[in-house]
Every structure is written in C-alpha cells, then in structure tokens.
Length: 125
Image 1 (cartoon, rainbow, N blue to C red):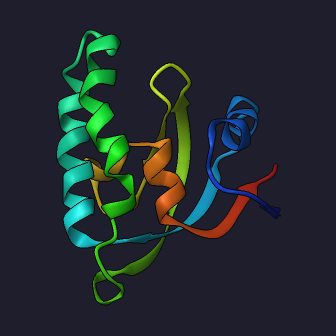
Image 2 (cartoon, rainbow, N blue to C red):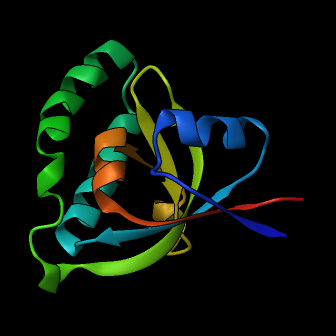
C-alpha cells in the first residue's frame, strides 16, 4: 500500500523510512541544467575516497541551493524515489527510471528542500 507522509526531505524525515526498508516516492520540481549538474556531480562523488574532502566540495553547492530552479518556465515536475541518505555529508540519494546513469544520484539536503514539490509517499509492505 502507498501512504502519504508530510514534510520536506530532511535527514529527520527520510532516515527512519529508509532504515526500515521503505522507499519514498517523492514529487520534485527540477530544471534540466540542474538535473545534468546532479548527474555529473554524482559521477564525481562515486570516485571520492575522502568524505571530509567531499563535504568541502558540497559547501558552495549548499550555499547556492536556492538557485537550482532559475525560473518557472524551465521547471518540470517529476516523481523519483529517495533510496538512501548519508548523515555525515547531509545528502539524500535519489533514483529515477531514466536509465542506469540515474539509478543513484546524490543531492544535498538544501537542494532537496528547494526542489520539494510537497508530496512524499512510502511504499508500505
């Protein structure tokens, strides 16, 4: 069954569901340029060995999170899944059905709050 949950995707909202093995379906707003940036950043993240150094890479991204959606004309709405989180780096992992490159992409909590379209649901067994 599908059950709606309230709130924005922050560590305190997603961690319990993910830890319980309950994927979260999440409606987001996104722009194509930002979507491509996230894809490239996630590929870069996969090669990182030092998460402390990765946090430094994320700092300017966090500071610019309010610019991920440049204007209403370039915004699309989409449903993806939140499949993981990293408490240390304060990131959430999203997955899309657009192909293998989109199976695991990481975004900051700040970006997640910015693109949240207000609907999250869990798939409850």
